[in-house]
Amino acid sequence: MRAKRRNRLLLVLGLVALCGLAVGLTLYALRSNINLFFSPVQIAAGDAPIERQLRAGGMVKEGTVARDSDSLDVSFVVTDYVDDVEVRYSGILPDLFREGQGVVVVGQLTADGWIRADKVLAKHDENYMPPEVADALKEAGYSPADYKDAGMDGSP
Image (cartoon, rainbow, N blue to C red; front, side, top):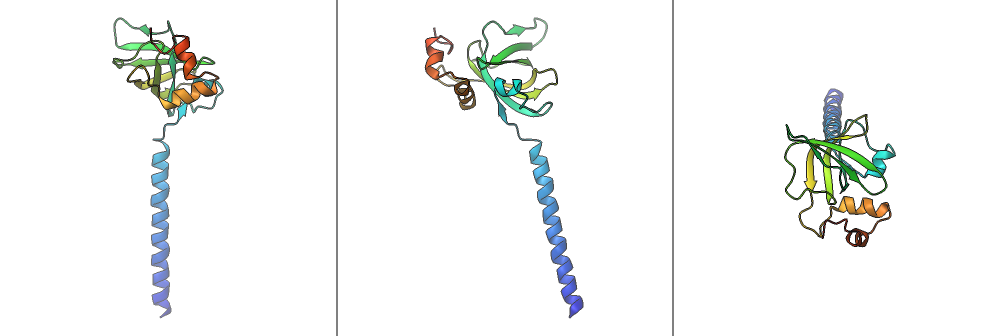
């Protein structure tokens, strides 16, 4: 009878250990795929992780879009009107991408302080701003009315 109980106990402990290992490995795998949103102020403050996937957003600063004539490389500055962060991207930009518009980039922050973007997401109409960008700009002291009054929303 004792041998039977011991075998059951070992079986239960083995199953618990395997479940714990499976949960631990799953959480470890998901941790590397999480990409949190950071504003230029947070990036300048050093809150953003270096060489890890992240999302950053703000407004494309006027006069900062530079395209390479020989390739699809483009660089631009994303701002929240407090701090700026340079973004470098290689690929075709969305049709609605332009200076003075809200944008969210997905990529990695380099040790030099610029973002190597894998994706660039632009807004889909003149009234829309990504929620993360709107929140970051509000934290910086700007309201949506400020964008329209100053012509920063891309409207004429």
